[in-house]
Length: 128
Image (cartoon, rainbow, N blue to C red; front, side):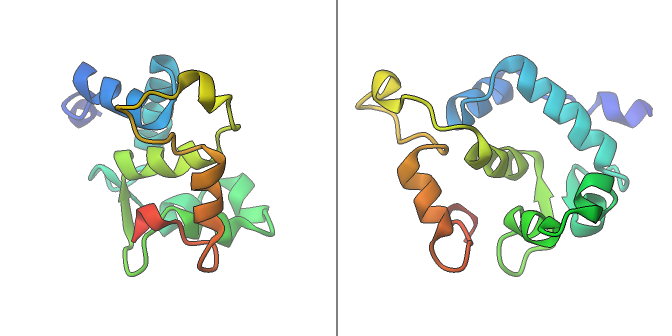
């Protein structure tokens, strides 16, 4: 368990993830805790098998499709940043016009980006 302390997120990483995904600081730290508890190999990544050990996904008829959303074609591991980017697409659509800024890109949970993820048999352009 001592090795986990060395893999804690730095504040600047949390801030970058907040800007990129729209999750709050507390949501990111809570999801990081869940991510590390699923990381049975303690290597900073999750495999398909790690996801399959989640009981709710194992019994879900769409479980395989949900799991596949986390992995770019040909990849068999996902790091925390990729995990968060995928989860961001599942966040509810917010009123992005209020938060839109000319210097920032469109949020991952925007209608446009969600539709792009549906293209090409459900593979999101961000994971290619």
